[in-house]
Image (cartoon, rainbow, N blue to C red; front, side):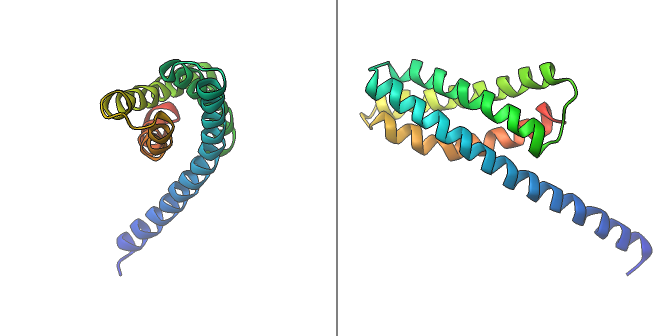
Length: 140
C-alpha cells in the first residue's frame, strides 16, 4: 500500500464512523420525536376528534422542534446560526408533513386505510429523507 492509499483509507474511516454515529444519534433522537409526534397525533385525532391533516401538522411541528433542539446539541454539535438552522430544519420537517399528507390522501382518503396505520408506516420514510436533507443542508 502506498502512502497516498493509506492516508486516503484512514481519512475515510473516521468520516464513516462519524456518519454512523450521527445516523445512530439522529435515529435515537428521531425516536423521541416520533413518540412525541405519534402520541400527540393520536390524542388530537382520536381523543379530541381533530381532522387527521390538522392533527398531523400540530404533532409533527412539536416533533420537529424537539428534534431540532436535541440534534443541534448532540448529533451535529452546532450552536451557531441557530435561527437559520431552525428555519432550514423546519423546512425539511415540512417535507415530512407533505409526504405524510400525500400518503393520507392516497391511502386513507383514496383506499380507506386507517389513518393511524398510515401515520405509523410513514415514519421510517420520513426519517430517512429528513436525515439526508438535514445533514446536507440544515447542519452543513
